[in-house]
Image 1 (cartoon, rainbow, N blue to C red):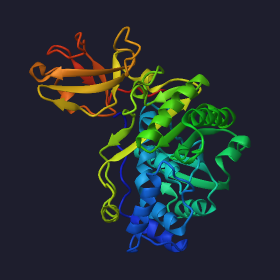
Image 2 (cartoon, rainbow, N blue to C red; image 1 turned 30 degrees about the vertical axis):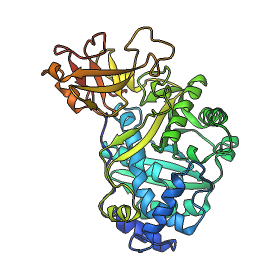
Image 3 (tube, rainbow, N blue to C red; image 1 turned 90 degrees about the horizontal axis):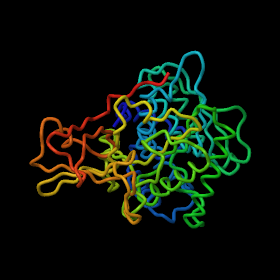
Image 4 (cartoon, helix red, strand yellow; image 1 turned 60 degrees about the vertical axis):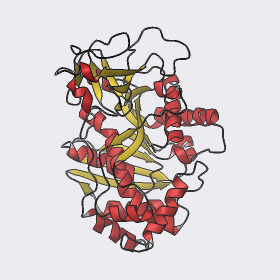
Length: 408
């Protein structure tokens, strides 16, 4: 991982959420019915046939008291690498204009503000939150009123009730430094087949970027880590590249995604960030996980520099896109980046930009020992590999988490 690990919401957020719940007359964290609402909402989220999220007061309560604090770190995690390289920044002189598309309760712009604050940012984010759910926007406004700052970052919020289609047809005036699309695409156009959905979403996002994004602005998309939804984002990546957007992160290349070759693969983050302690009892009663943070994301712009351009090591830079795979006598890792191999067979599922690299336990040495500690999302510089794509005892491997140059 590059950049700062996102933090769960602090304990005082429990009071903020409770006050907002009372203000908008929703069951709060102390309501014994809340775990049941959360459990039912989870079933909706996990159903690929989901329709009309947020339609009831019970669902809105679950979104406020459970999904908002769970989702805030996701956008913070997605933004961390762009902040580390200086591609997303904030200053006192000029506010950072943010368009939060499908904003819901505001978890996306709150996550961005927290990531900027954690990195020492000082200034203001001017957010236009757009959603077709009036009740959700009302809650987002209440949260912003109760908690108008994150560290030294002020959050100024305006809301606008509009659907994604309406927003694309009539973009807001002016341009934005960041357009956030947080866990929205999964809910849209489910009546279409996958190919048609990809083309439609790519055309809509590319049009919005053309009309509303600053020339060097960033389009940041976050989706759930569920396989079909992550793979939709991976396919969307290819379609957006065809429309002349550049991939900033997490990818270190713009070739074919190696994890689309097999239906069982998908690209996602898995960070060691747990739910805040005040939320863990709710998760346990609802039968949901409280450990770890998973999501998929994609950052794009019409202009470089990309994350790979800011890495200070040589050209052999790869990102781990699997957990460490341990078997008898060896350890392996699937990596993605500039081609590790020359010509590959046409039916090779990983293609030229992916490889399953390994190291035999007997080949462990001081120079490659860091291989034991690698996991999904890590960026590494690899030493020479043998014909079986294995590291020998003299082949170094370097973790590049701290070797990012800011782009000024």
